Image (cartoon, rainbow, N blue to C red):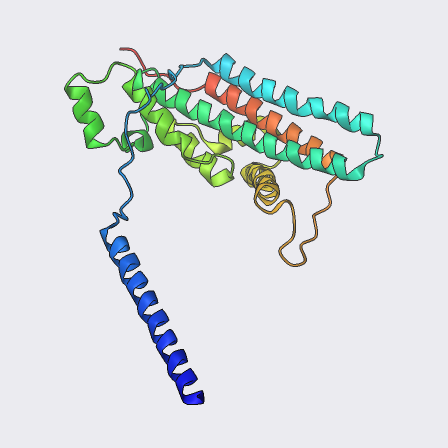
Length: 267
């Protein structure tokens, strides 16, 4: 009796295994027949609308920065309303102001760089070596030669290429200014005048720019936390106000240097 029961169990298990094997074979065949390749992304389904690149003047560029600063400084009113009752919210506002300030300065230097490059392109300013080394792709040049691009192709190219570059650290800004023939010692001289020894002016400017850059990056990328212990760095309203005043002084100095920049001599 036990023997017959054992035979029934063995047969039952064998039938189940055979059934599962058939199902697996069917499933495997279905997977093999199934096209697992991703479908090609449909291109040009929607009309691409590229905003026109506007050639702003020097006053307009400065106004863009001042408008941004006004928005940032407006947040001090919110801090006054809180009256230190909610320190966490106040600190959050202060940190956001630093991030927005860094973005405002970044955008300003993008606009000034584009302005200067177009001044050279229009033969108003003297060419520089970095300007002559600006890279333009062959397909862009061919499109220009074939008449496929209008007269705005160069400013569009510059706008696109420089939009990919961060201009907030001292070194990055220095490279951009060198491209258009401006020099950091000129900017530093406008800021510090006779107050600071000549040899220390650029050093001080570098320090101020990099302090803002480093704090902005720490807030934006680490939420202002230290890697060592995940504690937030302390922040004070005077720190933000000092950063804002430094940024204003830098922009005012650049504005003056641009106004005095060398023009192409007309013979």
